[in-house]
Every structure is written in C-alpha cells, then in structure tokens.
Length: 310
Image (cartoon, rainbow, N blue to C red; front, top):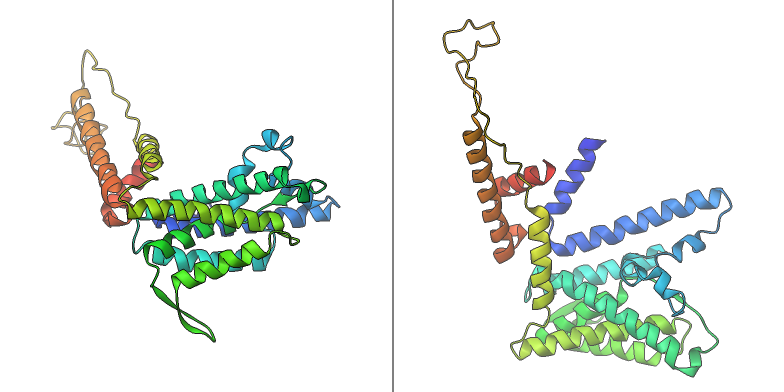
C-alpha cells in the first residue's frame, strides 16, 4: 500500500499544473462521496459535514470557516457538476497553457476562485433580494471562468469545434457564458452565477494587464516560488568532525568485519558529498523555477523525488 501511495505521489509531483488541478478536484469528489455514504449508513446528514468545506453566505459564520474560501473551489457534490467543470477546465486550460505558463494557470485558478467567492459574499450581503436568503456554495466554476476569459482575451479569434454548431471563436463563447450568468442573477442558483461573474472579472483583469505588458500574478508566483524552493530543499545534517577516524584494514580476511577493501567515509568526505548533493538539488530547483517541472529529465525528477523522500 505504501508503494502505491509513493507511486501516486510521484505521478502527481511529475504532472503539469492542469492535471494536478483535475486530480485534486476528482480526488476531493471521490473522498466526499465515500464519506457521505459512510455517514448515511449511520443516519448522519452528510450536508452538515459539507458545510465545513463549502463557503457560507453568512458573514457571521465565515470567520469560523475562513478556510472554505479555498476549499469550496475544489468541492463538487454531484457527478454532472464535476464532469462539466472538469471538461471545461481541461479544454480551456489546454488552450490557456499555449499562451501562458502552467504556473499562471494554477495561480489564476485560485485567484479566480477567491474573486468568485468575494462577489458571492457581496451579493448576498448587499442586495435586498437576498435579505431573507442564506446559501452555501461549492464548485470550480468561478475559478474556471477566470481561465476562460483570460484565454479569450489573449486569443479572441481562436476557434474551437462545438458539436452541432461547428467552429466558434473563443470571444463568442466567453460572451455567451457571461450573458447567461447576467440573465440568471435572480435564479435558484443566483449566488453561483454571481461567483461566475467574479471569476470572469479576475480573468479579464489578468488578460487586460497582460496586453499592456504587465503580469499582475508575478508577485504571487514569486512568493510561491520562494515557498516551494524552501519546502523542497533537503535539510542536510552536517556531521561534526571526530577526534579520530577508524579505517578498515585492507589486508583483512574476506569473512571478517574488516573484509572489505573500502574504508568508510570520513567526516570531511561525508560533508563534501552532502554539499555536492545540495548543490545538485539547488541546480534542479533553479531549473524548475525558470522552465517548469516538466522540463526536467527523468534523472533530475528522480533525484528531486529521492531528496524529498529522504
């Protein structure tokens, strides 16, 4: 079992950001469904548990569940919801990464989700229409809308084939989706449609500033790089020199404890080897920072994986 987990972890570490996002969403969905089934067997309402990972519209409850601003964008509670969202994430995420980096994809996903949550909370607590209503929200739609609109702004005339329709430019797809959300702001899923608009606004802001030559995600990506570099850097224990080092005797018999003709490392040799390993890890991490994880060779990925494991 431990080997399977290590293998899955290795596959996850080696996957691009787009696949990681899909893995996380699907993994969260499967976990939620399994937990819900177990709770139902004990006659426990699973919706009570979901309220701790969905973002609440009540501002008095939110401070006690502040983490839901992040968790909600990876949570889906029915099959069609996650299927539709993951299809959109894969399609538009693939086009997005033709013009931007995988790093931009992950950061914009989170920023879009946070923007969607912000507009959702504002709508429920400002407009009188929601005065007597309370809601809980989950789903990756707002985060995906940010990716959709950033892509549409970067490549508005990029055409995709739609079933029964044919080739359609991204700008028309984006315009149609935002129109649906604007017309649905008072529907049963009103809060969700406000969140979609919030995510779209994040994507529009990123795309417009990018056209002006400004990357508004750069400070966030820089901070993430620093954290990831620190996290992946192996902590090397330097061995203090001893007063005396014992070596194996090269003339000893093969079956004796001193049968090997190789002596153990001295303290200085041990520290030198560890220093070389640390320098190699630093080189690999610098390469990840400049060109991304996918640019590493198989040997470099294995070296990084072994360093993290140890």
